[in-house]
Amino acid sequence: DDKKLNELIKEKSVVIYLAPPQQSGGLDLVLKNFLLNVNKKNIQKIIYISTSGVYGDKKDKIVSESESVQPITDRAKRRVNAESQIKSTGLNYTILRVPGIYGKNRLPMKRIAERLPLIKRDVCKHTNLIHVKDLARLIVACVHNKKSNMSTINVSDGTPIKTTDYYLH
Image 1 (cartoon, rainbow, N blue to C red):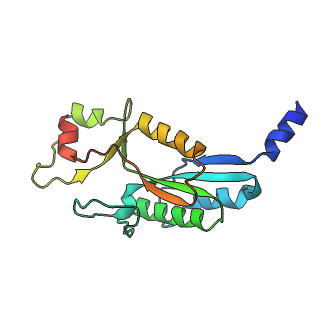
Image 2: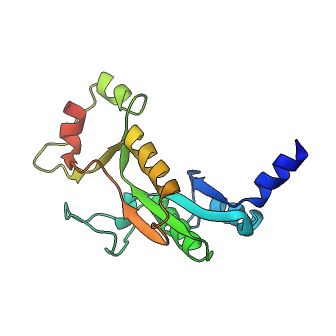
Image 3: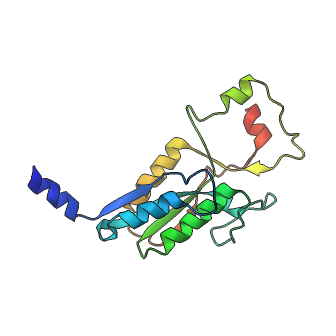
């Protein structure tokens, strides 16, 4: 009923922001539009799903959250911009920097079926991955975690792998 709906509207919500930015440009205009049109007073926390691509090419070096961002691709530049937008809102936030996501329906089956050539192992770079179910569990944990205020967290399955080995596996 209307009374229950009004009570829910008064409660602060946790926003899990998974929407990708638009396909071109250096700014995330999709997030900008969202932030301009949402009532920030009703937001308890925003959880933003970013990318580990914000670090650029670190030449197989292990990075921590304090590492400087050096995005190479326009997509990663839009994600850096989005992170900056989130941080400037004054809202409580958690930014999850996510690498490649794998799981059912998220595998490169077409590439494998077409037997496209792979990069030679000795020149192939390492990548990090995360299973879609593990990412979902992390997001739920962030929703319930009262201590993850104003934080940026790198997430992965903790097993760096060469892209070629990933395709072969």
